[in-house]
Image 1 (cartoon, rainbow, N blue to C red):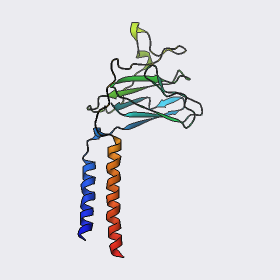
Image 2 (cartoon, rainbow, N blue to C red):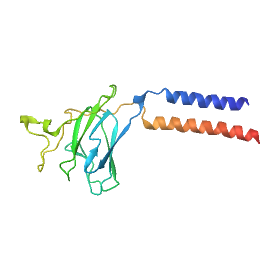
Image 3 (cartoon, helix red, strand yellow):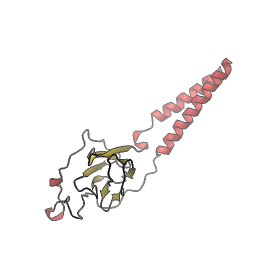
Image 4 (spheres, rainbow, N blue to C red):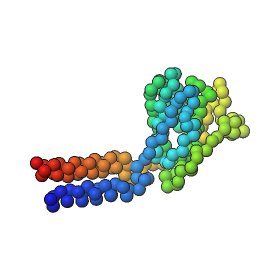
Length: 186
């Protein structure tokens, strides 16, 4: 009986430790579906260090491309590609094959709160140097408003692997406790 109480107490302590970990200790993933020749949602807001995953649900190939920053490459039906954003800023992207498809990823600094509603940026309002449009159909001009300067270095903060390891250990402790209870019943 005493051994079962200790196992139960250990599982409770590990669970409490996991639940009290700060949210910023591990990154999140946002999903964008490519469907009906559109990025859905068209604007995604994430924190620095988070990942965006694009999944193609259309019957034709698409890309998510931000010139000079990232390019998912061609994604056939059912394919997914991910990009991790390490620097705050506004990243505009488009589909190389379909110039009517564009989207935005807004990356806020890791310590800031996310806005309740993702911003909308009308393509007509996106202007580059000399007031030239950043999105132009039928040209090589790409919709990119990436931050200039150095990319931030990865932090030494614990990542998803630490969280996954803690969950695994908590699960093993709970299983051991349950097996100890079952073996005593027989």
